Image (tube, rainbow, N blue to C red):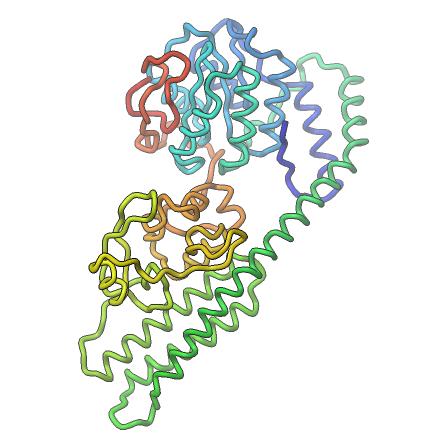
Length: 453
């Protein structure tokens, strides 16, 4: 079973391991009482991530439930799991449980041999919940809950609630058992610390490799913009030049210098966003300058051409459908608008990948910051929906590695105490559910609300 270890100093890691052992031995998965009301389940989940109803105890052993709870705590994620008997009332179950627990997170319920989950949208997008639920349908309880947890903790956002850190140590666990657990974990602490360091070094190598591959493309962009400046043949003292033209030209030069400096200082792929944002600003300044020199109306601020930002600011939105994708409106330059209108393919920016030349939206996660600098303001998700890059950017794991701030691909939070104050509209059902028929595979996932429960 996978466990996500948080990077920290060796003393801190050892202390965390000891405390984890004490928590498992002293608390473990919260034992259930005969009262199986939603409020009882919620109170239990506020103390521990796993709740096993007494009437469903045959589904998962105490040891397996303890291991599952510890994995979730080690991952530091707000994942809540309840195992309930088949006859448990299902009407509005997820909404009631989320309201009673009052913690933003991902909630999964095994009810008899049926399984479903719901999540706050800031923790995991509804489509991701649906896909995870579908992937584990038909498995026995232990395999299903383990597989779901393995996938969920690596794809969800947020942190474990602070309420899990409180424990009642009056449960009768012997001092000898606690000390023994502590000694065993301390003995293995050095090995765990070494694993953390290896994982951190591997991640840093991957980030450096992504940046170096991305650097080639960004340098091409910077060079292309420098060539545009050279071709401009504008002199601040030329006849007809006024202060507004000189200001446009100065902004373009400043953007060029800023892009070069920012790329030279970039240490991670997400640092590239500032570079392409500077280039986008500079190209728009040149477009405004050209309009002033030719006596044309000043252009409105538009994003660059979607197919290749080096084409300059777009002039219109045009319908486009990627291979095996859904149609959408994308900003296009004049030349690509003509090509699309004539039934021809646009001129697409392709980059090198391990599989040959590919459009930038199919080239890997590092191109998210690159595209984010060009297409800011929240329009990027709509442009990239259904593409490889769009799918990557829609996950919390991507935000952790490459940054957020791309509109709907933005930051992910969770584990906070919100009480009943949450937007049930975030929990739109995707059909099915415990009341939706269809036996064990009821196609759940998505949100807490919307009927079905």
